[in-house]
Length: 103
Image (tube, rainbow, N blue to C red; front, top):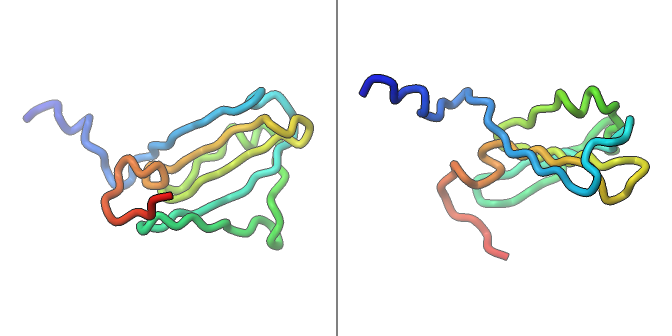
């Protein structure tokens, strides 16, 4: 059908879910933790610089885009309950099929 291709999810699509918590992005520095999801539902933490979480500026955090199977958690250094989460399209579980572990 003509015009339907615009709504088809392509493998190279840059789709991600954003979850803002607390005050969101109000500070200048954020501690960023990276996680990768597997098809079986396992979530594993990825090391930042030398195994530690990365500290990034607000401008850099705003430009972050997760890989398809990645979750980025950016927590404020000043306000402990504030920040943002970026979920890649496969990490959300919305577009993935397969066995997943249930909590």
